Image (cartoon, rainbow, N blue to C red; front, side, top):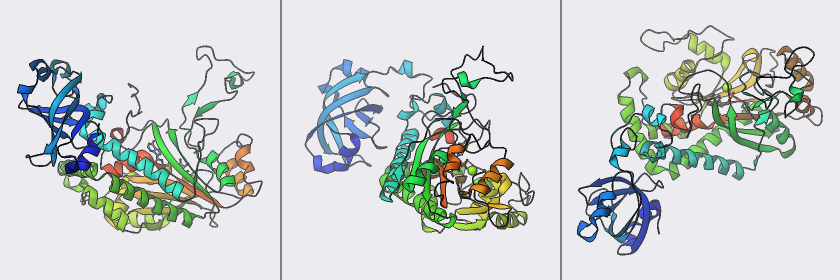
Length: 480
Ligand code: 4AD
Ligand code: MG
């Protein structure tokens, strides 16, 4: 018994051998040629059926989307595009899929838009585009674990239910087991969370960083990799309410070492995916080209998918301060009208993704690491620079994506951290455990967060973040 990927890899080594394969019918041509796929690869194996050898009742049940077990002999294929095929000797129909039942589903053999695929997320694993994307996503996840484990990092699981808002942005999903129709109140008339299962107000984590920092303060080099939740009501092709984040944290690292790590890490995992997913990426690159051709010229990627990946691998990421970036953006003419949709308001304003993408795609034409952002627009835990105005933040910007990584050197000086928490209105008592890391042998340390789905978007060339995660959670979307 063979998986189809393994079977095709062995190819002619298997000539004249009898094999058993399982799969779903992708097409059944001329009542003779079955294209069978089992999800292990983008490629199908061709099964040849001599109908004289089979009961008509069996032949009738073989149709697109049906599942089969086939026993047969491997022979050289005469058709183009494949080395081998299987001459069927026995066919077991495991599950039928009558064509009248397929009506209205994405399993019907015709072109379906990505939007329609999304509405039938439970069926889209059967499609080439989504299955290829999922295999690349899997390779990236494995490559991430591989990279960190080969470089001395310890994988740490941080809690999903937490009492803290790590980013201080208030974008939390609150959770409680209290009776929502009958909430207990305290003397001040506020909800009494001490009666909650967790004894305090809790939420789904927006980042494992704060807990990750405490782990790095004992284990040195750690990373987290887990689901992350943001209750931001932004309906964009780059945002999810539930996404997966990878957060390395390293004791003794300064910001420049953090940038070195981010660059080396990104290049390694992309290389790993390119080496292990060649067939899928070839398919996705063709899809990418077709999609680019349908876009207005100004929005088209100058590079094909594979060239864009190679470009990132072969170029050193430009490192540029926020202040320098603002100067460049103020003087730039991004398009024929010479204007950004969101004009650059000057020093101090946050950058929009169109600004980030302009720097990467038009100005430098290489990934950019922006650093030393204004303190006011970044989180409380970032290390203050001597200028008293900027913090040691870094954002890694990628073509087609904009921000793919956000990170920083952390404020390790307790007095400065306390001052900052006060300024940002963060309760010191609440974060007593976080402050403890600065009380007992505090050290410089740095880390960053990579959004897995944004990396998958970049590597697969898919355009919408909803198409690179099995069951996307976005505003008004929890069907599955
Ligand atoms: O920039 P962010 O908010 O940084 C943090 O959470 C830090 N605690 C990370 C750290 O230093 N350990 O998020 C980091 C990355 C972003 O660059 C982006 O790739 C991704 O997480 N991200 C999202 N991805 C999908 N949907 C969303 N709503 C996202 N928000 C952030
Ligand atoms: Mg960020």
